[in-house]
Image 1 (cartoon, helix red, strand yellow):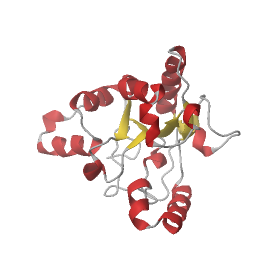
Image 2 (cartoon, rainbow, N blue to C red; image 1 turned 45 degrees about the vertical axis):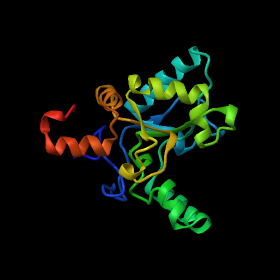
Image 3 (tube, one colour; image 1 turned 90 degrees about the vertical axis):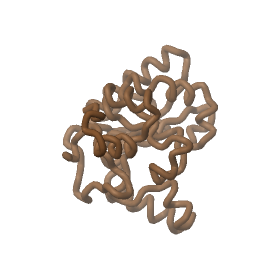
Image 4 (cartoon, rainbow, N blue to C red; image 1 turned 30 degrees about the vertical axis):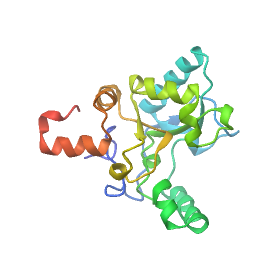
Length: 199
């Protein structure tokens, strides 16, 4: 499977190489929680366009979404992981922070999203906000999935993150949403029955 495939599975068992950098990254024209140009406000072009459309429509619906973190390089993820490991310990870090190479952010297809009403925090409080609820109901129409849903921690290997959205394209996103599947479950099912493959 190509590292550039929009539906690529990246997790603890399927890491990206340390030198992988997406070739089609562009800045995402949405409000961010910080000021200034930064790699965090970049995504791969199809994901960036879809994210901009999603933010535009959420604003039209009277909501206030804000981007927190998009692309992260292998080295940046390494720094984040090691810092969390030192401060929070291995048990907590393994649930909330990916090791370098194992982060979806390195694909350029993931974005952490919040809202100013909770201080732009990456917190489970986000699920109770109108913004968080709107995303859970509508993100798949733009090609995004809630990557780490509640109740699937034993499958994804990560704690529930209502702020982490991953672009996979509209057909696959809608399929996963309708079926209540994670990417891990989709690939497990596809291996058992190729006819289950959407893309």
